[in-house]
Image 1 (cartoon, helix red, strand yellow):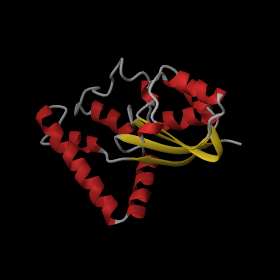
Image 2 (cartoon, rainbow, N blue to C red):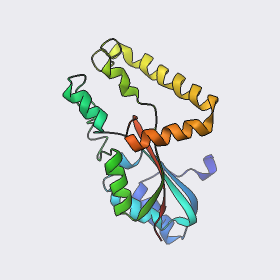
Image 3 (cartoon, one colour):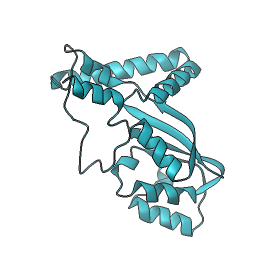
Length: 180
């Protein structure tokens, strides 16, 4: 993959790609959108780099979700996901759907990954109150996701989509295409 790797300012790279009429069948923004100054500009510009019948995949942290707010209201955690200057934008299920719609995309699939914040609901596994529990929570998340994927990938995708509808997971993954 190294010959295809390009480092630099994402906005300059996209503008250069548009000028050179580069087209892609899939553009993957994994943990990017929350870090850029203008996510709307980026999403609008990326549409011009998608070939016909192409898709964009976006993965963002699911911040300020209903579950996180319930945890806050129950004093199970503090607002640990507020992380400027690293994170400049925050997305939950509604926010991600709204920005994609606003930028002219149709969502094909909205998914959520493992809800690691379940551990915050239990005082004995609350890694926010006891940081030494964080690594085990992460390893449990990996174990559970790997088990579910290995058990039946299609069922796991259905589970991930149901979790996406609920906005119940640490990360959100959207697959979308430009509206025609």
